Image 1: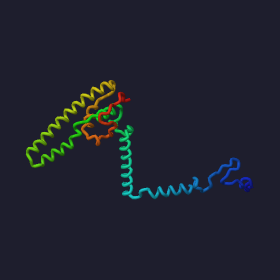
Image 2: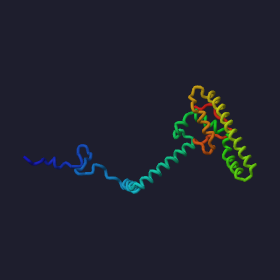
Image 3: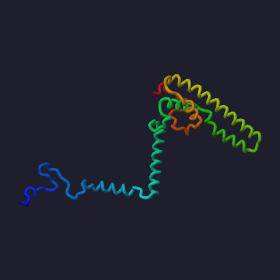
Image 4: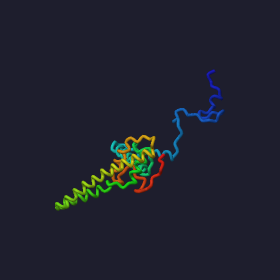
Length: 201
């Protein structure tokens, strides 16, 4: 009466005869045993994981530096996905190219400042006076160059992008032009004097 049928006791706890599929053993892990390769990879990952707060901070700094380096490399290559919102779009790309194809007087500012400092500390009053005059004259030329840049840029934008929003483009162009060419970001993609394409779409 209380005995079990033999057929019930002969069924394997891990395999169902009708389906041939394995079932979990009582008290098992509920997951497959990792291979040796997977176990070694997990051990290496645990060994590399930062344990102390100092190691975590160091790892975060390294990750930020690597990410920043990748972004700068992408910006140098001209990948607009990594640009700031102010640098994206065909209008801003044209403005950058328009500025970069020009030779600006601002490019001479640093050499002229050095010359002015040398003349000022030369001890000769005439040379110091000449240096000051040279500096003032250069500043006036820079102002005139920026005014000329604004005039030409607005005319080009009106012709090339008649329906586009051009608000802020003058400020964008002037601030870029007042930087030395090797310091500009995004990096220049054209050379001085290069002809620009007619369409920027």
